[in-house]
Length: 75
Image (cartoon, rainbow, N blue to C red; front, side, top):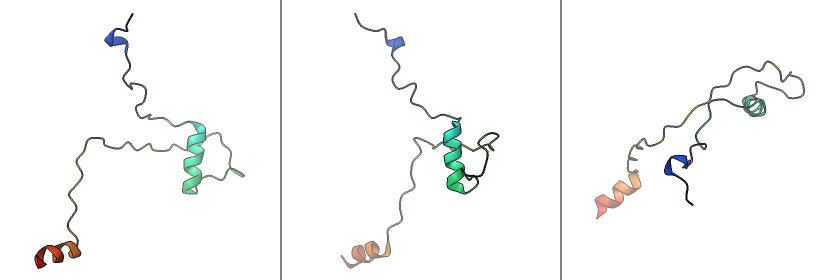
């Protein structure tokens, strides 16, 4: 017996999260130098912004370098 198509997830749970766990917040703050695991208390941590990437946006075309421009001019 097959599953109904409405019951299939298709990666529905693999999206980006907007909340970090305490361990993730500590790791990110330690990278920024705002938290010292040896001295600071892990309770009452400051908020950490979660930046989401914009999927599906077009990247700007790269400007040709001078070497490539000279090579095409020589031809």
